[in-house]
Image (cartoon, rainbow, N blue to C red; front, side, top):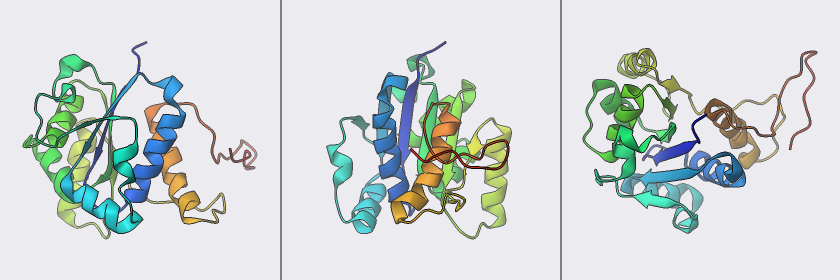
Length: 195
């Protein structure tokens, strides 16, 4: 089995909390993946600083690539990245991916994932959706990508904003195929203990 190599793109849609908690959760699960590359747009950094009132994204021990660095390994299928998440994924980014427009590293890396038949997960963040958004999501889905709206659940009775957001992060981690704790319904409808 190929070792997991993960690409994470953070775009300028609202929802920086999801990216923050996803990074922290992935770092906690480091034994299950070998490499992680991060691309963060300037708009994403601005939104992060506005929503979370910090620049914590710069402090994580990860490899960051410029949005226009087409020499980054994730721009080529030969680098064999196994998974890519775009969290949050703006509708503009979704539209470029659905149209096959690889005009930056995010859309190019997503195109690579689709052409290589690897795991592409788009954590879309917009509401409501217009018909163009819906058709773009359909196109990406038909091409092999996974659309995972950043919509929290409340089965686990989350008590804080972080706990609400973690209901989505746990789903994203599941889609990566990593082993983790988190809220689960058992066969009889009971929940496992939160970890």
